[in-house]
Length: 306
Image (cartoon, rainbow, N blue to C red; front, side):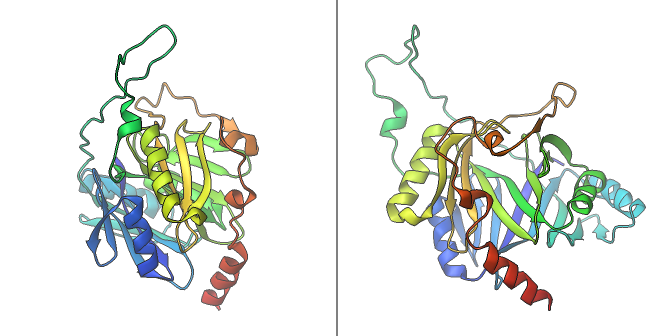
């Protein structure tokens, strides 16, 4: 495994949600599909009476990776479909179909490294800071991670960790694990929840100025999109700013995420409480952990099952 390939997001209002992600900087491809700069097509919107993640795609190098995952799932007695073209397994706890397909690896062009003046080290002489003069739409480089609520965290984590082969990066005590399928600190988090729901998607931009510029532009168009930011997380270490799409899903701009390219060198930690969510930033709103539409989501999910 080496990346998130794509996701399918179910929403009640396709056109309004599509407008949000176009403003967010994703490239529309038609038919409510969107691409990032480095990841290609990574988001598809589909109709759903309640907001939810329908599919989460994982990119692998070749069919051998699919056969290995299929063998592990079979030993666990987890129903799934598999061929050289791909694998799909439905996770009942989160309500998400997780798929694996052979997918090209990311091949990003390096971002320009901003020059920052610091005490005792002036590197930018007689010039304005580049971040203050940038113009144009912020374009996310790739989809970085997704956070999901599951009603059966033990089973969901068994499928993701033992079956598919994700690795634990860090843990939030009594909540869930941050796990990875690439060298990014995390590509997925599943957390305990009384019902299935998607908390947020997260999209990489070049640096903190792009996080700020992207959010500022989104809020100029609609201040009600604001959720939480600007800040820096403890877990993962990244800068963040969260916004809310018309369906109620949170979408995060991020930069400077921790990278784990040597499993032996990384030491997973257990974090606890709300204070572990941010090293600094504005006060976290209660709606971040308990979105305002949770009651409606719970009713909608119950109606779908009846």
